[in-house]
Image (cartoon, rainbow over all chains, first blue to last red; front, side, top):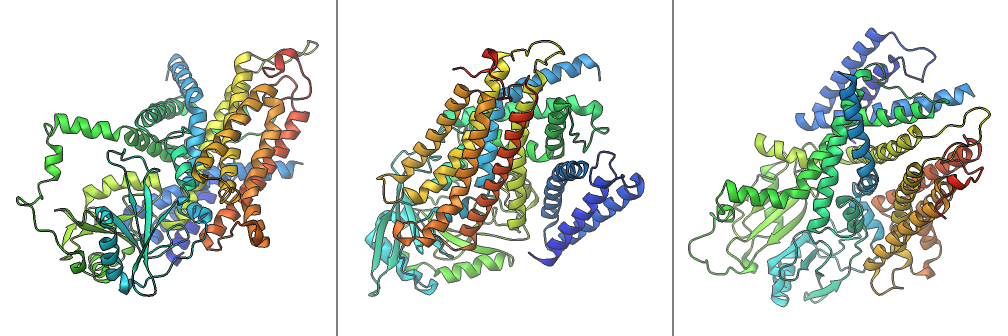
Length: 90
Length: 543
């Protein structure tokens, strides 16, 4: 996988985590992150991810890849959080 | 929004979901596997001893093959990177006259190579249709053949699916922001299934909208072209495509005078430096509009078709006939149109995006399964304190049985028919027909078992069947490698081993699901169709 593609996906993952951790429904951490700073940081990371993806992909493809990756990550995070939360509550 | 409107949309969402959910489960589960159609085909391909022909010698191979087998001039393919499922440098399929364009299963498959003396060796083969069979299950929601009526039915299912998406979003609007990312586990099972359903449905909504729209278009594209011809082109659409046809029939040209493939590849790559060719498709060499399509992909661009994109060249002069489908050089209009294909087929972003689509498609299958679970849970008759255990409604019992029978039967059937590609090879006359028999045999047996035993008592054995069937895929490969005398094979390309590794992971995931479900069946609420602890007359299956 080209370095820029990997960087873009990792930046997007970091941005998604920041946004998800700011949600009152997140189950990963004992307390949610402060909403505004975390969402702002998440959005900045997503922009950086798009820029990184744009280095090796056509712009329309970079947008498609980012959206596809975000959908997958945002679907998985609540499920993984529920698993983590259940283990911790045992 | 007024609550009575929400209620109407909820009813629409419920019924469209119930009507189409199980068909869509099959379409999405088979679709997830179809994302990796080529690795599946490579996994299932029996090894053959193919004489390798260097690319530089392919002009001789083409000329000698056409001399020995003129029928190949209608269309043949030159593989640049021979694989387990396409081992020969040159191959083609001869179809019967009047055969349906969508029929990808019929026809005679041939391949050609050069022997030590430089003579063309043409042989007929029967390649495995396993991957194509799974693709058909995906394309026509579990029906056995990709025919017009089955596609139209799929179109109806896809339209209802679109309606379910729209109505589902409207129902969710009042609590969309408040409940975003919510997945609340606990005693309120209805709330849990609702959250589990909504998380997937709302977050992957764009993915599902693309799938619903493209599926409707794929179902009715023949009809759409016919309407376009009638109302926009006054029945002259075919003529519009034939405007390039020369007035006088040109003299037949000698295939031996065609430009060598190496030169054609250079022409194609000069048009788009990022283009990576994979095959050359020669079409109508004996006709007036002969062409060669240089197929391939561009890692940076989207590809307009499932197998990539192409540039069409004149095989004799190398003149560009069309570059509308060449990845990386398409204009805005063609890129827009191609985007719909690319977004359906995952032909952008390479292998990472294919994995994302694989997982999103599995999540989609879960969306439909969890929708049914939610419907059943919402209609559960709860036991009141001090009262006898109530019987559950007939419709919930029937839907629970149908859900586990269809969905888990589909998983088990597909897994076993994949494993059968190696177990039955050489033991049955028509292995491709046996893929149908194995899949539908397991599928209908699972369904019958679910109705006979009732969902609560059938679900765990069915999950174990699906888990073991899925694990049988890598175990078959392992056995083939360890005991060569069995007559099976273990393809060791990364693509083929990837199938084994994925199946192993899937098998373990199903085992985990079986154990978790067994716990629920054993310890969960007794006033549920999923409880197997107590057999009440009204809680039994249909036996």
